[in-house]
Length: 262
Image 1 (tube, rainbow, N blue to C red):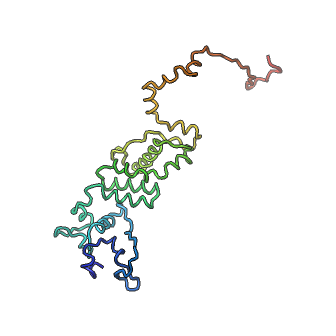
Image 2: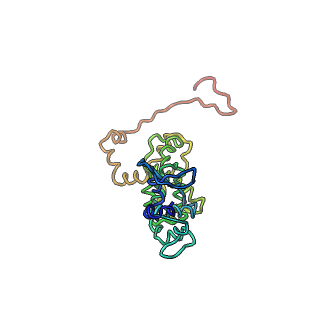
Image 3: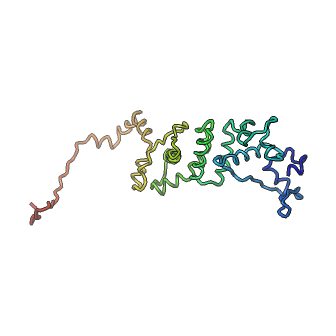
């Protein structure tokens, strides 16, 4: 299309073409749009794991009026062998902006599990500048299904924020482990709540185990226990304990039970 209409498309990005042109299926060509109907355009999503296809997509979003693949791989008079090299020469992969765009688009249609897999793939294959900042900015999508998992798999009716964050980090750690990496390798925090053994246990115990132990210890050290003074609990502790004695009938193996209580 850019070859057919070079002047009209000189400043037009590939994703914006459907706004001014329409695809004719009968002739397999682009034609100028005759009506003022608004069109929503979108280029097929490509993950970084797809290599050159992903970098081709980046170039199409940044280079107006592309006439060929060679045109896309050309910069300052140099024809680069790969789309990846062309992106590097243009400075399109020096910051985390491209990863933000990739994750923002993926969040609109991927599940939490798929999104976490994509996030780990980005870190493994591209070494972003600030992985923790990416985690913070896209935490909503990364933890998309974690509240549900805590409620229905771990039987926690009201999961705390720390529990949701910890489960999200644990899910990421499991994916990293398959690739021989860890959260620490990318300066990501470790889970603050232990969730490994919560699966299948009663909800009351699960809720007790998800309390933030570091926070509780800090409150205790700061004098939280002084709140007991003057309360009914303090008075109960000061009273003399009362002991009650109960008598039960015990039957020992090999010993016939007594005919009556002693």
